[in-house]
Length: 298
Ligand code: SF4
Image (cartoon, rainbow, N blue to C red):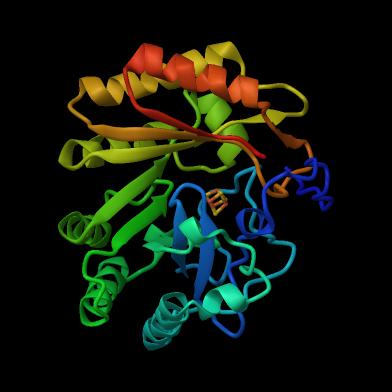
């Protein structure tokens, strides 16, 4: 499907600028960027392992602007570690909050909460995924933040790869949390949203197997597509998939339900209302007995 260039149909969000604005760049940094995250409840150091902007999904709601190419093709690990050093110093000294982008962040959100592997593509496609996780673990140990949480934000498509499995095991032993994307219940709707050739069944199998080893956080973005909210039949199928994961011995720590908060890839994608998100969250709680966190667009 042709990408529509206009990215402005999402109504202006009511979020403060430091929640709305999650650019992958900061000053001259190439890979590490600070974010004040609602889901982290404070400062998160994002690590962009896909500066080339290549992803194995092409989500219709993606906020990565692919109308412009990526700045870099490769990740320079020593530079990643250097940038982590600088940002840690800025957060600890409070200097980060003198920057115009973060000057109005309230006191209670000025705490460093985690480092998050995400960025402009799927982080687990990074060839030496386990090595970068290992290096970041060493970095936090020698930087005096050994307990800093490490979050992997992922579409779960690569969990079957040995180097990814080794990376997940490292995360398990070092305050890691895996946020796996699941936001559809049927192959048909999945293809409409993610626009990928990777089969839905394979993703579900990866999530199930990973959840049998450690509890996962499921992150689910729901939206209006061409004016149509999530169909009830799709919500029911989505709950069925969650129940199947649980029935096969998978553990789910919580489900994050959220909607579009920044301009999406396609102009026909719009946020769901707070009421609809609350209905989805309640349906998941009732049908699956899971803890659900809900984040609106405003
Ligand atoms: S998986 Fe993430 S980065 Fe990739 S297209 Fe979807 S939203 Fe964008």
